[in-house]
Amino acid sequence: MIRVLICDDQEVVREGLSAILRTTPGIEVAGVAEDGALAVELAEKHKPDLVLMDLNMPGMNGIQATRVIHEKFPNIRVLALTTYDADEWVFDAIRAGAAGYLLKDTPRGNLVKAIEGTAAGQTFVDPSVAGKLFTHIADRTVSHNTTIAAELNPREREVLRMLANGRSNSEIASQLFLSEGTVRNYVSGIFSKLGVTDRTQAAIIALRHGLAE
Image (cartoon, rainbow, N blue to C red; front, side):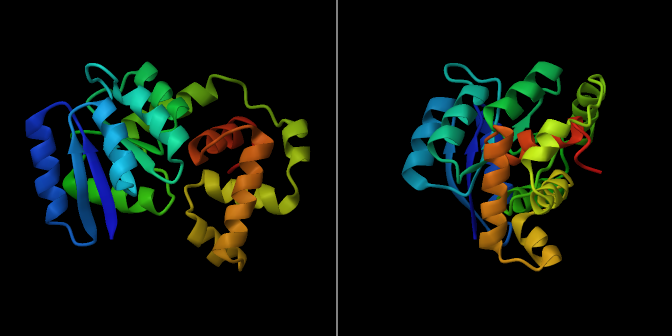
Protein backbone atom coordinates (compact mmCIF):
# COMPACT_ATOMS: atom_id res chain seq x y z
CA MET A 1 0.00 0.00 0.00
CA ILE A 2 1.41 3.41 -1.02
CA ARG A 3 0.58 6.08 1.56
CA VAL A 4 0.29 9.54 -0.01
CA LEU A 5 0.18 12.96 1.62
CA ILE A 6 -1.50 15.64 -0.51
CA CYS A 7 -0.34 19.25 -0.16
CA ASP A 8 -2.13 22.04 -2.06
CA ASP A 9 -3.47 25.41 -0.98
CA GLN A 10 -6.67 25.01 -3.01
CA GLU A 11 -9.41 23.03 -1.29
CA VAL A 12 -10.98 21.94 -4.59
CA VAL A 13 -7.66 20.46 -5.71
CA ARG A 14 -7.13 18.65 -2.40
CA GLU A 15 -10.63 17.20 -2.56
CA GLY A 16 -10.25 16.19 -6.21
CA LEU A 17 -6.94 14.43 -5.65
CA SER A 18 -8.24 12.75 -2.52
CA ALA A 19 -11.28 11.45 -4.40
CA ILE A 20 -9.09 10.06 -7.18
CA LEU A 21 -6.56 8.38 -4.89
CA ARG A 22 -9.08 6.98 -2.40
CA THR A 23 -10.68 5.00 -5.24
CA THR A 24 -7.34 3.76 -6.58
CA PRO A 25 -6.34 0.24 -5.46
CA GLY A 26 -2.99 0.12 -3.70
CA ILE A 27 -3.00 3.79 -2.68
CA GLU A 28 -4.05 5.27 0.65
CA VAL A 29 -4.41 8.99 1.43
CA ALA A 30 -2.35 9.50 4.58
CA GLY A 31 -3.41 13.12 5.01
CA VAL A 32 -3.96 16.49 3.35
CA ALA A 33 -2.19 19.80 3.95
CA GLU A 34 -3.00 23.31 2.79
CA ASP A 35 0.54 24.70 3.03
CA GLY A 36 4.15 23.66 3.26
CA ALA A 37 4.46 24.01 7.02
CA LEU A 38 1.53 21.66 7.63
CA ALA A 39 2.94 19.25 5.03
CA VAL A 40 6.19 19.01 6.99
CA GLU A 41 4.26 18.50 10.22
CA LEU A 42 2.07 15.76 8.74
CA ALA A 43 5.05 14.13 7.04
CA GLU A 44 6.67 13.75 10.44
CA LYS A 45 3.45 12.52 12.02
CA HIS A 46 2.22 10.07 9.38
CA LYS A 47 5.46 9.07 7.61
CA PRO A 48 3.86 8.72 4.15
CA ASP A 49 5.68 7.02 1.29
CA LEU A 50 5.14 9.99 -0.99
CA VAL A 51 4.05 13.63 -0.87
CA LEU A 52 2.17 15.22 -3.78
CA MET A 53 3.48 18.77 -3.43
CA ASP A 54 2.12 21.96 -4.90
CA LEU A 55 4.82 24.63 -5.21
CA ASN A 56 3.39 28.14 -5.18
CA MET A 57 1.75 28.44 -1.76
CA PRO A 58 1.62 31.20 0.86
CA GLY A 59 3.88 30.94 3.90
CA MET A 60 6.24 28.01 3.47
CA ASN A 61 5.99 27.23 -0.23
CA GLY A 62 6.38 23.84 -1.85
CA ILE A 63 10.05 24.32 -2.69
CA GLN A 64 10.89 25.09 0.93
CA ALA A 65 8.73 22.24 2.22
CA THR A 66 10.30 19.82 -0.27
CA ARG A 67 13.77 20.76 0.94
CA VAL A 68 12.85 20.26 4.61
CA ILE A 69 11.11 16.94 4.00
CA HIS A 70 13.95 15.69 1.81
CA GLU A 71 16.53 16.57 4.47
CA LYS A 72 14.60 15.37 7.53
CA PHE A 73 12.87 12.34 6.02
CA PRO A 74 14.98 11.10 3.08
CA ASN A 75 12.84 7.98 2.69
CA ILE A 76 9.77 10.08 1.83
CA ARG A 77 9.58 10.79 -1.90
CA VAL A 78 8.25 14.16 -3.03
CA LEU A 79 6.44 14.43 -6.36
CA ALA A 80 5.84 18.03 -7.41
CA LEU A 81 2.36 18.53 -8.87
CA THR A 82 1.87 22.10 -9.99
CA THR A 83 0.52 24.42 -12.66
CA TYR A 84 3.94 25.99 -13.16
CA ASP A 85 6.38 24.80 -15.82
CA ALA A 86 8.66 27.87 -15.76
CA ASP A 87 12.36 27.02 -15.68
CA GLU A 88 13.01 28.43 -12.21
CA TRP A 89 10.26 26.31 -10.65
CA VAL A 90 11.53 23.13 -12.32
CA PHE A 91 15.16 23.59 -11.34
CA ASP A 92 14.39 24.83 -7.84
CA ALA A 93 12.16 21.80 -7.19
CA ILE A 94 14.84 19.40 -8.41
CA ARG A 95 17.53 21.12 -6.37
CA ALA A 96 15.27 20.95 -3.31
CA GLY A 97 15.06 17.18 -3.70
CA ALA A 98 11.86 16.54 -5.66
CA ALA A 99 11.87 13.05 -7.15
CA GLY A 100 9.61 14.07 -10.05
CA TYR A 101 7.69 16.97 -11.54
CA LEU A 102 4.18 16.80 -13.01
CA LEU A 103 1.66 19.42 -14.10
CA LYS A 104 -1.86 19.47 -12.71
CA ASP A 105 -3.39 18.74 -16.11
CA THR A 106 -1.70 15.32 -16.08
CA PRO A 107 -4.32 12.65 -16.96
CA ARG A 108 -5.50 10.53 -14.04
CA GLY A 109 -3.91 7.33 -15.35
CA ASN A 110 -0.54 9.01 -15.79
CA LEU A 111 -0.75 10.53 -12.33
CA VAL A 112 -1.41 7.17 -10.71
CA LYS A 113 1.40 5.58 -12.71
CA ALA A 114 3.76 8.37 -11.63
CA ILE A 115 2.81 7.93 -7.96
CA GLU A 116 3.38 4.18 -8.14
CA GLY A 117 6.64 4.55 -10.05
CA THR A 118 7.99 7.35 -7.88
CA ALA A 119 7.26 5.36 -4.73
CA ALA A 120 9.26 2.51 -6.30
CA GLY A 121 12.26 4.76 -6.94
CA GLN A 122 11.65 5.88 -10.51
CA THR A 123 11.66 9.46 -11.79
CA PHE A 124 8.66 10.91 -13.60
CA VAL A 125 8.81 14.30 -15.31
CA ASP A 126 6.08 15.93 -17.39
CA PRO A 127 7.09 15.91 -21.10
CA SER A 128 7.02 19.72 -21.36
CA VAL A 129 9.16 20.01 -18.26
CA ALA A 130 11.52 17.27 -19.45
CA GLY A 131 12.12 19.34 -22.58
CA LYS A 132 13.24 22.30 -20.47
CA LEU A 133 15.40 20.05 -18.32
CA PHE A 134 17.21 18.47 -21.24
CA THR A 135 17.58 21.82 -23.02
CA HIS A 136 19.14 23.17 -19.84
CA ILE A 137 21.58 20.28 -19.82
CA ALA A 138 22.27 20.48 -23.56
CA ASP A 139 23.03 24.20 -23.30
CA ARG A 140 26.04 23.21 -21.25
CA THR A 141 28.55 21.45 -23.43
CA VAL A 142 28.51 17.77 -22.54
CA SER A 143 31.81 17.04 -20.91
CA HIS A 144 33.02 13.47 -20.72
CA ASN A 145 34.54 14.24 -17.37
CA THR A 146 37.30 11.72 -16.83
CA THR A 147 37.69 12.78 -13.20
CA ILE A 148 34.08 11.91 -12.39
CA ALA A 149 34.28 8.70 -14.40
CA ALA A 150 37.48 7.70 -12.59
CA GLU A 151 35.74 8.13 -9.23
CA LEU A 152 33.26 5.40 -10.13
CA ASN A 153 34.15 1.77 -10.62
CA PRO A 154 32.71 -0.10 -13.64
CA ARG A 155 29.76 -1.50 -11.68
CA GLU A 156 28.91 1.92 -10.24
CA ARG A 157 28.97 3.44 -13.74
CA GLU A 158 26.63 0.71 -14.89
CA VAL A 159 24.24 1.33 -12.00
CA LEU A 160 24.39 5.10 -12.62
CA ARG A 161 23.60 4.62 -16.30
CA MET A 162 20.52 2.56 -15.45
CA LEU A 163 19.50 4.98 -12.71
CA ALA A 164 19.72 7.88 -15.18
CA ASN A 165 17.45 5.93 -17.52
CA GLY A 166 14.76 5.86 -14.83
CA ARG A 167 15.24 2.30 -13.57
CA SER A 168 14.18 1.54 -10.01
CA ASN A 169 16.45 -0.28 -7.56
CA SER A 170 14.46 -3.49 -8.04
CA GLU A 171 14.76 -3.26 -11.82
CA ILE A 172 18.51 -2.63 -11.61
CA ALA A 173 18.89 -5.54 -9.20
CA SER A 174 16.97 -7.87 -11.52
CA GLN A 175 18.92 -6.88 -14.63
CA LEU A 176 22.33 -7.06 -12.95
CA PHE A 177 21.51 -10.16 -10.90
CA LEU A 178 22.14 -8.38 -7.61
CA SER A 179 20.14 -8.05 -4.41
CA GLU A 180 18.21 -4.81 -3.84
CA GLY A 181 20.33 -4.22 -0.75
CA THR A 182 23.50 -4.39 -2.85
CA VAL A 183 22.01 -1.94 -5.37
CA ARG A 184 21.06 0.44 -2.57
CA ASN A 185 24.66 0.32 -1.36
CA TYR A 186 25.91 1.09 -4.87
CA VAL A 187 23.47 3.98 -5.22
CA SER A 188 24.52 5.39 -1.84
CA GLY A 189 28.17 5.17 -2.86
CA ILE A 190 27.43 6.88 -6.17
CA PHE A 191 25.61 9.72 -4.40
CA SER A 192 28.57 10.18 -2.07
CA LYS A 193 31.12 10.25 -4.90
CA LEU A 194 29.05 12.65 -7.00
CA GLY A 195 28.22 14.88 -4.06
CA VAL A 196 24.44 14.60 -4.54
CA THR A 197 21.55 13.51 -2.36
CA ASP A 198 18.98 12.08 -4.76
CA ARG A 199 18.48 10.17 -8.01
CA THR A 200 17.42 13.19 -10.06
CA GLN A 201 20.61 15.09 -9.27
CA ALA A 202 22.70 12.01 -10.04
CA ALA A 203 20.88 11.51 -13.35
CA ILE A 204 21.49 15.12 -14.36
CA ILE A 205 25.21 14.80 -13.66
CA ALA A 206 25.32 11.51 -15.58
CA LEU A 207 23.66 13.09 -18.60
CA ARG A 208 25.72 16.26 -18.43
CA HIS A 209 29.00 14.36 -18.34
CA GLY A 210 28.22 11.67 -20.86
CA LEU A 211 27.94 8.89 -18.29
CA ALA A 212 24.47 7.84 -19.42
CA GLU A 213 22.91 6.83 -22.70
